[in-house]
Length: 102
Image 1 (cartoon, rainbow, N blue to C red):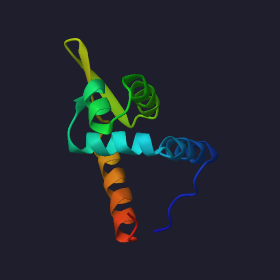
Image 2 (cartoon, one colour):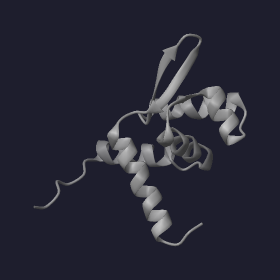
Image 3 (cartoon, rainbow, N blue to C red):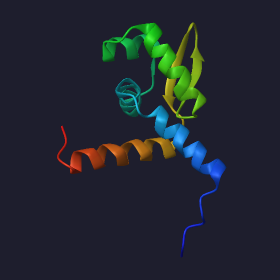
């Protein structure tokens, strides 16, 4: 079965998501969230990034529907949006590791 042709709006949406992934910091945030949900402070500490930097990246990742946040008291706990994002990240990581890249 042939895949349907990709519409211009769908192609633009895919390009926007891929542009959002074109940042090592955002990839590291997503990879950390692949392990378990966590707060901005936990992400900042785990990745050795400033909290404002992590917050800015999370804002974009939320806009792209790659992560979601839920309030837990005074904190917001971030996690990957759904199993599609989990599968996408796992495939990208498997591809990179399969190709012998560091």
